[in-house]
Image 1 (cartoon, helix red, strand yellow):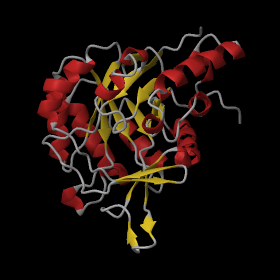
Image 2 (spheres, rainbow, N blue to C red):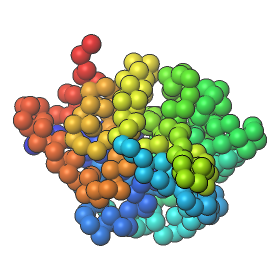
Image 3 (tube, rainbow, N blue to C red):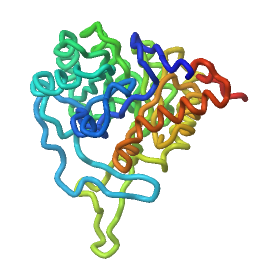
Image 4 (cartoon, rainbow, N blue to C red):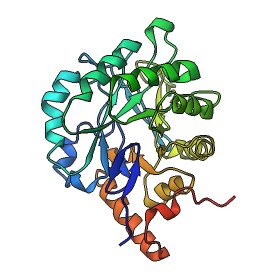
Length: 303
């Protein structure tokens, strides 16, 4: 078997597979199906300072090649996550990555300060796709200066490795990546969902109560792959790739394009065993290709 261990952003993962935030909850349901220690890491559901009920239903709709969601960061709040969910995940030999979100700069600072002293947390993943309520609702991640400022705030508030989760809903994702790298990000994860919508033609209304939602699943893979490849050429910090990965071959494509690790999201919904299966299939492929270490394929795409 090949060596699957990867190091990135101060993290050491037993393999490059991380479950994507918002698709795996806090791992409890999946722990009833398989041993979470098989995973390289778990990025927990987006966590905010206070509990959030999220958006009204309907807030998930299936689409061709994927799904739209407008859950709206439903979560129990940071205190409950620290008291109940982090201790649960500490039972397993997997990296605990906490995805933090907020609607004001101070939200991110407080979250980073709180998480800094919590036992077992390996890194913070910073969701900058949230709307900035003080700037008319523009997402933090759509402007390089604003994204850089959030990165600096989090960097100053914690000693933990910070991973900035990039939004694809921008003109140039490489400019955002370079800005957060310069501001102190240890890694970037990409891409978050693309904005989309679905319409009920009988009712002549949007299906989602929030009208628009984030598109994920295989439909977005070509876009995600292109963005990872472009960003790998633009920054020196590691990239965690995601967007439509449902198989080992998908994951290998992302790593060839320059990702040091990858996340699976929508795949968890239709095949809860996706994680262990993808890890096993990567092992099989590497053995078949005579590759002894997974680092041999990272960024190995030929021009």
